[in-house]
Length: 228
Image (cartoon, rainbow, N blue to C red; front, side, top):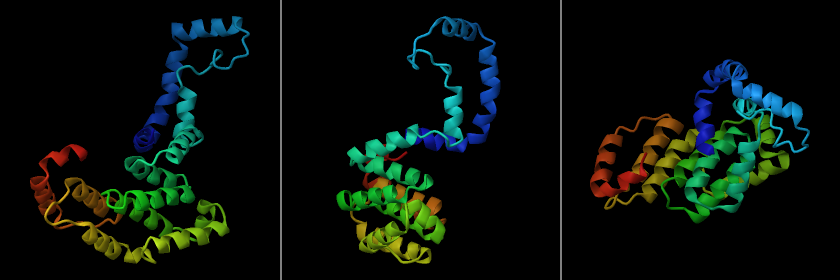
């Protein structure tokens, strides 16, 4: 579900432009005509049996326009019951995008408490911190659910040992990466996550990225199946 949300966000405008033409084409079809005849005769009160959008055109439109909450409800439910590291690493950017910083914070805390040494934990924590630092006071109030929760988030950030400003993030990340690094057994997944962190979150170009990736691949060639 999270991958679906991520993928459609990349093609939102293109997909929205397709909906009306495709819907009009379907409304000219024989299947549509038969459906209308069936609905005209069927007085069943069951809304599922009387589905007027069986192709999902309008539901898809709502998802693209951010007016549907079915993805949010699903992700919220699953993350509240599941502690999987990959799930929470994927869910965290989604929570941030939805303006749900308390939910994002819960994922950050879980990752640091239950998966402290996992390659996705530092990048996920950094994404949260960057998003928080980039918000002004009004945005923080809205995203945290009220002023009372801002102090809660600030306290948790301090307990995580995070930096105080966005300017300090790169130095903090470098320190955390050095702490987690094992020169004798470099993880290709960790190298991959660190490169993505530098390029996509910190907007830095790691000059040693190619060298580190090559070394990690040599140390753990089978680990490549975990990198995509």
